[in-house]
Structures are given as C-alpha cells and as structure tokens.
Length: 217
Image (cartoon, rainbow, N blue to C red):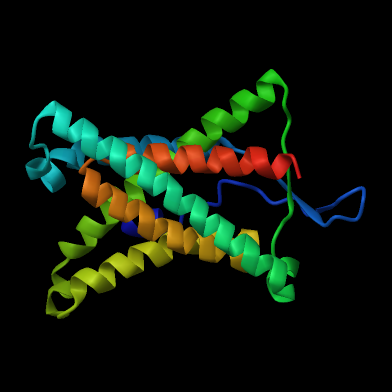
C-alpha cells in the first residue's frame, strides 16, 4: 500500500511544445481518471485514519481554531509566494535553471477548460496533502524498523518531503526545488493548524495562481 502511495502516477502530462515566438516550451495540463482514482483512495485514508493518527489535536475553542487556521493560511500562502519569487530570481540569473524549466502554461479559458483544471487540480492537491502531509509521516513513524534511528522524526519528515518533490521532476530543477521547499512549508502549516484543510487550501490556491500566471506569460 505504501509503495503505491510513494510512487504515484504523474497527474500532469507534459507536452513539450515550442512557443510561436520562440519563447520556450509550454506545459500542457491534463488530468486523467487516475487523478480522481487516487483522490478517492486518499479520501479513504483520511476517513479511516483521521481519528487514529490525530485524535488529540481537536482542542480549543472555535474562535481560537479559526484564528490559528486563518493566520497559518495567510502566512503559509505568503511563504509559498516568496519561495516562487526566489526561484524566479535564481532562474533569471542562472542559465542552467532557465533551460530546465517551462515559461508558459497552456490553459483553455473556456467553461470546460476552467472546470477541468479546477476539479483536476483540487483532486491532485487533495491526494498530495492527504498522502504526504497527513498519512505518510505518521505511517512511517509507526513502522518498527525506524524505531532504531535516533533522529527518526527529522529523517522521516525529510523523507516525506523528498518523496513529495520527486514526482515534480517533469517541471525541471526549479520545479523540483519549488516542490521541496513548498512541501516543508505545507507540512509546518499542517502541524501548526492541526487540520489538513489548511495546507490543502493553501496548496490549491497556490497551484491555481501559478497556472493562471503561467498562462498569461
């Protein structure tokens, strides 16, 4: 089961299409049935393990939880934007990075195109947040083999971030680094907010923002 979750199919298929103005390759988004199937599996994981893994987290008044969740959401999204801005600067001044990434995103602004990207992105984000932020860190900690490691908590957290970043290799080196640092931020947001829906919302809004921004380049 863990192997199936660790090596997920890539949700976004890459189309290396030359731009009309010679501006580089274009990333073409395509969400298939696998995206929704894996989101369904993630939903089952959340349903069966939410009370077992994090039952002690649901404490505090509604106001306190709302304040914490809203604060973490704003800070988390801000950090993701800063990560993206930093990588854009590095990409601009580093020829190796600029050759390894994609400058544009092909996006159909028709109703069907918008709906497809909206629900497809939501499904893929739901899967990634449940698996890499909610399930795998706790599942790895409960494996008896890892109990012999002194720094197992830090090592397993790092392993989950790396496993999250690897499927983003199709975006090039900048995309890989972006996923790595964003994975750290989203995991911290999950721990601080004590709910998976905060990093899920941040991740979804960030992805949609990047898709829209990329389509306008």
